[in-house]
Image (cartoon, rainbow, N blue to C red; front, side, top):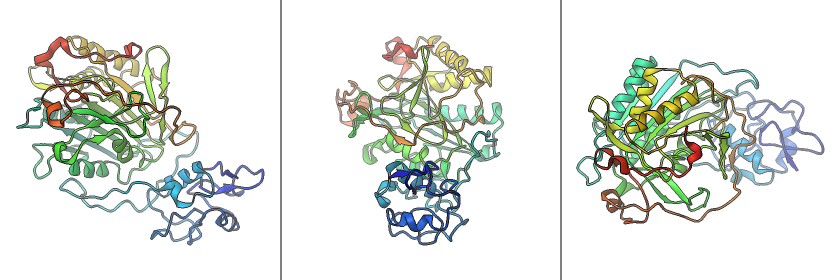
Length: 440
C-alpha cells in the first residue's frame, strides 16, 4: 500500500497515485468514500474532514473546509511519509508548554492551519515580521563574556536602521530585560512567540550570542557524534539547549513559504539548527550525511564550524562584541544586499582583518542560487524530496577537548568543547575549523 502523493496522510489504492480523484493535499477536499476506505487502514477524523485522526484528542475540526490546529497538516504529512497502518504513532510531535515571563507566556497555539502556497508561484512577503534577539554575558560567573548584550543592540540597530524593521516587531532577551532574563524557560517561551501563527509570506529573524558547547548525540546523527548546544543563563541548573531542540521548536513548526534568517554567534555553532545543506566553495550546496528536511526557508549564518570557536572581541570602535555579529552587521551596513557568496567573502575578510581564524558557515533548509542577492524577505519555496530525517550513517561521539572556566562550570574537564573565546586575551590562538572547503 502506497501513500497518497498529495501528502494528505491517506493511502492510495491499487495503481492510483492519489487516495481519490479530488484530493488536493492535507488542506484539500476528498471524495465521499475516501475516508471510509482509509478508515480500514488508519483511524479517520470523526468530523469527516478527510484527514487522519491522531489518537483520542479533542479537535477544533468542524468538518470539511473548517479550520484546523497549526500542526494538523504537518502530522498528516508525517503520517503519509510513514506509510499506512501506523495510526497516530507515526505523527506524534512535541507539544510546547508556555510559561515564564517571556512574550506570550502560556499562550495557546494558533487556531487555523496555514494555507499552502500554490506550486510554482512565488510567495510574496505578507508584511508580518518578527525577530528574536538573545544575548547572554553570564555576569558574575567564571565564564563571563563582555559583548553579547552589545551584540543584541548592534543587531537591533541593523534591523531597524538598515532594513527598516519596526522596534515593536523585535523581542530582545538579555540579562538587562526587565522581569525576563534569558533563562531556559524564557528562551523556550520566546521561541514559541517567534513561530506562533507563522503563515506563508511571514519574515522571521533569530539571533543568539553567548556560550555554545556540545553534548553527546544519543542517535548518532551528527558526523562527530555530538549535538551542538546553546547555553541559557541558568544552564548549570536547567541544562543546555541542543540543536535538536532548537530545530524542533523553531524550524519544524514553520509551514512552507515562511522565511527565517538566523545568526548564531557562539562556539560549535556550525550545525546548531540541523539544516540539511551547507555552502562550500567547490561544489556549492553540500547535503549533510543525515539530512533533516523541512518545509520553510531557513538560513543560518554561524560563527564557526561544529568543532570551531567564536571570539568575543572589541569592535572597530572599541566596544566589546561577538566577532561574527560585528562582521555580519558591518558587512551589511556597507552593502545591504550583496550576493550570498559576496557576503560570505566579506564575513571572512572582516574576521581575517582581526587575525581571527574562525570560519563562518552558511547552512540552509533549501537549496537556492548562491549568487542571488541577500534579502531578508526573499522567500524560497520547498524543493526538498521529502520531509524529516534521512538516516544513512550513525556516528560514535568524538567530543572536542576543552579546558577553562566554562568547562569547569559544565563539569566536563577536557571532555567537551564549548563557549565563546575571549579574543582580546587569546588573539591568534583561536582554533581554526577543519574543513578547508568551507573557505571563501
